[in-house]
Amino acid sequence: MFSPRIDGSVPIRTGPARFLEGFRRRVEAGLVSGQPQPRSRYLVTKVSDARIEVAAADWSTAVAVGLNEVEIHAPGNGRAAYTVRYRRWAAFVLVLSGIIGITLLATFWWLDLPTYVEQNPGAMIPGLSTRTSVGLAWGMAGFWGFVFPWLLIAGHKPTLRRLIEGIIRDVDTHEGP
Image (cartoon, rainbow, N blue to C red):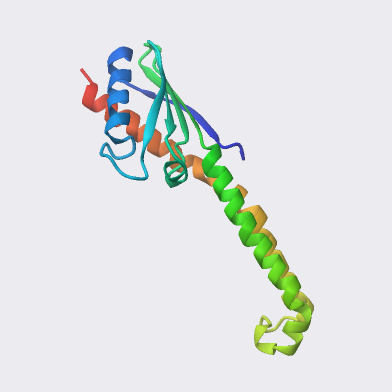
């Protein structure tokens, strides 16, 4: 569930060689939108009779949508199987959230949060004690810094699945019989 990888397959009408050649052209034209964009630069890294592998060319592309490594396999059975790995996107999310979490925790420690909340009643959550308000603040820092990124990684799978399947269908439509 938390692994930065998705697998699946999509029915295609185009023959394998023609489909993979169309996919290669799509990568050259701009994988995501079919047009060149600065944060959508991909390189074909490997091609064979039934398979093409594509990778994000730089970090700005890798973190834009998460199609870091894409492998398309078209064995000729009327389907295109895909694997998408988004490790660089996940690493970016983990590092950024970790920085936010550590910054919040360090700020709370530096401020001596319990004393700060006691001296500034406006910092308390209305109706809660100082201890509960401080506990919630620490909990929120922990959540946003160290739990939320894993939820993003798991929650990104449906988005990537829709994106890659849409690209495959688009290539199939343009290359189809």
